[in-house]
Length: 254
Image (cartoon, rainbow, N blue to C red):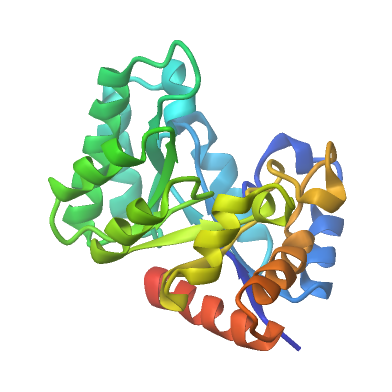
């Protein structure tokens, strides 16, 4: 049976509070044995740690998400350093830049993103990056921290940006959006990108695929992403499953 890695799942989110154990069982039944679970704000780190400790195969990452900018305080970067030093997570994140949502001050976003890139460099950890309408700015920031590696999750940039990220040692997380027939640019990138750059993700409970439009997403839906990618790349399910799982193990040391 395939052993898939969901490289981006917010399985600690409140949307799973009522049926988290059942959702985890469905994920295992679907072959999803590993979930990378990134944080969004400092207030949620303790719950994230507890949820990941409760279920096998869940691995936390700690960070400060740009969409939660209103919740972040300067001292949270110092607290994040303490958490990383004590908990030894497998990544820093979710962090990054969001130029799509109105009202998120770009300068403050950059401050927290740079701070987390510095922590990733200090602790030799990969970063899990959110980059919405900000891929060029993310690339510029990463270049200021040579050697930092990671993944840009839910990639929505261009083929040239994907190639630049590959040269910088960054993988791309691909999830539900690729299952929509009208996602022509993304599908073209996924069909042609180096296989060693590809990670599967759900971004649960967000970004459901075409078969679950308007519903809660969950890790058990990851094989639907796998199937579309295998078709786009004219590969077998097993080939994509094995390669993406190996990519996740290499990046996250999981």
